[in-house]
Image 1 (cartoon, helix red, strand yellow):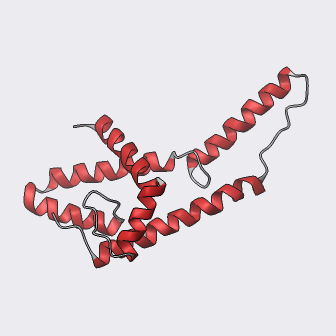
Image 2 (spheres, rainbow, N blue to C red; image 1 turned 90 degrees about the horizontal axis):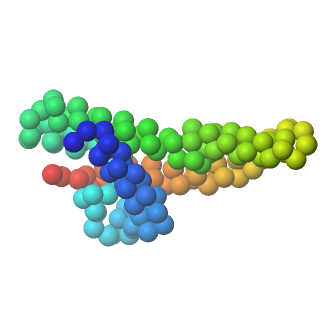
Length: 149
């Protein structure tokens, strides 16, 4: 269907998985005995497994290349999430500094505002913890209960 539908599906998937209910569902699937959702999060191990299953069953290389393109689009969008330590977080800090310094210039003050690294790390550390949670749970699920098509 092209890149635009991949972008839409990736955004919907990100919102669904990174929501509080998505994260709690992922943890309960991994460690609480809940049934694994076939449309849930997968690690790169699970994505490779799905690519192998689909490629062997439905036509080989074009399908696998489409899946690789979808993975690349997802990682592109995931990296643009406006939270540190992602690139989108760096862009958000630059935007905040530019806006505040622009307002300071208009008010006749010096444009020397900078976001303190301590403030950035206060956001980055919980984000990294959530990423580690995603890594552990998806890898555990892909090894112990892989998605079968």
